[in-house]
Length: 366
Ligand code: SF4
Image (cartoon, rainbow, N blue to C red; front, side, top):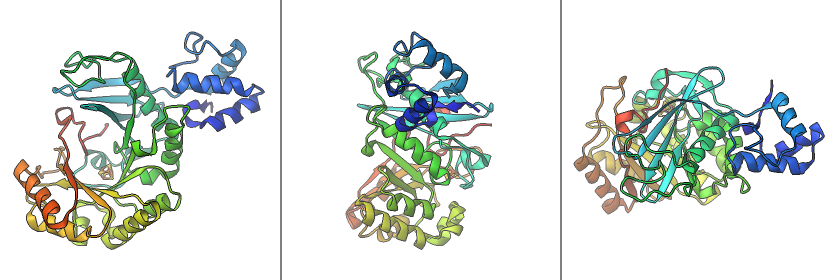
C-alpha cells in the first residue's frame, strides 16, 4: 500500500525520504509544495524544485490523498458551501466552508457516519461506516485552503468563497484560519487519527493553524476528554450537553447511558483545571423539549463555578427526527436567564447553510 503523504507529519516525511536515500532538503521542498503551494499532484509545474528522480520515486512509492469533489453546493445566502468529497474506497464525506464577516471556518468530518446515535442528527441516523485516516482529515482542510487560495466563485453570488456577499473580492488573499472538528463523526471516537491530523494542521511550516483556531466537539466521550486534558492537546473543547439532568440527556444522546452526566461534568472540570481552558457547552434548542426557563436555570446551576460558555443552537431539521427548532423569543429568553441569573456567557448560533443541509447535525452521506 502506498503511503498517503497527507498522513505524515513533517518529521515523518523527512524520515521517509531518509529511508529512500533522499536528502532532507527534498522532503522540505515537498512539504512546502503540499502545504504552502497546495499542490494537487506531483506534476513538475506544481513541484518545480523537486528533481526528476525524486518525483519518479514518489509516483511509484507514494500517493497524495486528494479527495475529488463529487458535488459542491452553495447556500442561497452565499455564506456556506458544502462539499461532498469522494474517498478512495468510493465512500463519501461532507466538508463545509462557512463564511462570516471577517473570517472563514472549515468544518471537517472525522468519521464516515457515527456510532453515537444521537436521534436528532443526520450523521447519527446513518450509523457508523468507518473511521477516517489522518490524511483524509488533513485533505479536507487542504481542499478548503485551496478553494480559498483560488478564490473559487460562490455558485450563488459569484463572489470568491472567501468574501461574504457584498464585500469586495480579494482573489488569492484568503487563508484558512479556523477549523472546527464538528462535521460527520465523533472525533474522540477516532482519537489517534484526529490528534495526528491536528499535529499536521498546526505545523507552523504548513497550514499553521494556531491552538486557538481548532475546536473539537464531542458528545461526551469521557475517556477522550480526560486524555485530551492529560496530554494538554492544543485544541478548544466543545461538549454537546443538550440537557442538564441525566434522565433528559440520556433521552437525547444515547452515549449518556455509558458516560452519565455526573462523570461528564467531572471530566470537564478536570479538563479546565488541567488546561486552564474554558469549555464550550453546546445546547441544541428543541422546541418544547429543552428550551424552557426551567431548562435554562438547570444548565445555569449545572455550570455554576465552571469556566464555561454556552452555545445555543436552534435545532436544524433532519428527516429522521420529528422535533422542531425553538423560536427566536425562546432562544433569547434562555440566553437572558443564563446571563442575568448566572452571569454565564452564551451565544445564539447563526443559522447558516440550512437550505443545503450543511448546518449542525445535518451532514450525511448515503
Ligand atoms: S451529534 Fe455528533 S456524536 Fe451525535 S450522532 Fe451526530 S455526529 Fe455523532
